[in-house]
Image (cartoon, rainbow, N blue to C red):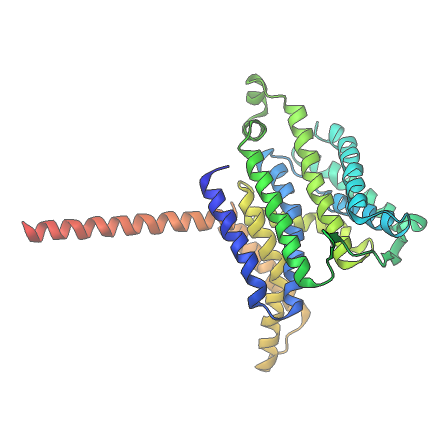
Length: 342
């Protein structure tokens, strides 16, 4: 992992440590918890999309596998939350291997359609398998997660825990992309044929990163179940898979940090739009929920049009431009001083 990544990780940890002290409202802390869970899922998806060049529209299904495994095994079988989560990870590895081996032979839109089909099937099963999943009614009374004797019962507990897990997942991902596996994935993204000629086992690499990406989502799903303590099929449909892909694309697919930025911004954006709606209502403007959709879509469209490589790429370009501007004026100032002295 690069030195710069260590610095940003430390800064992120500092923000996580301080932020709850500044936020007094539990609702906003709860929104930040969901941002952490989305961040964890998007980090895994970023490894698959940004580094292996594979698109997946079934990651909401892997979140569902983690969530339902944890819910069913704790509520109906009496397992401990951590053991149930481990079982969910095991199920995810098996299912992602089953899905990944045939699907990753495909490329581009064909791969997207294959993963879309799997996600749709799993969503239908979660609705139809009423004795197991509770169907549309879902499963409630999921037990609290216990961490070293402390039950995570408050939003503040979950804020610290959720973001700690996101930072841990980020640390693992950053080390992975700078390892031999990560270099192989970048080679595959650039040219699969060239990667093969360099001795990279492309099939094994793609399957491995697909499994790792799925495990990230499964763990996020388990944490979601323990945080909300109720699950139903609604949050795990195809639209959530599309939202995860959008989060990665908005932040920037070519770096793991883009997944962190995109997932955080798009999770917090609806809350920001609620502020906007309240402001318009106060000044007498007839603001309806349709305007939220219009603003949300407009923001996403603007980012995709003007920053096609994501927000992080735009930030880096702005930083480089400002750097060149400062150097240019500094050189001009030194030249003027030289002329005056001469």
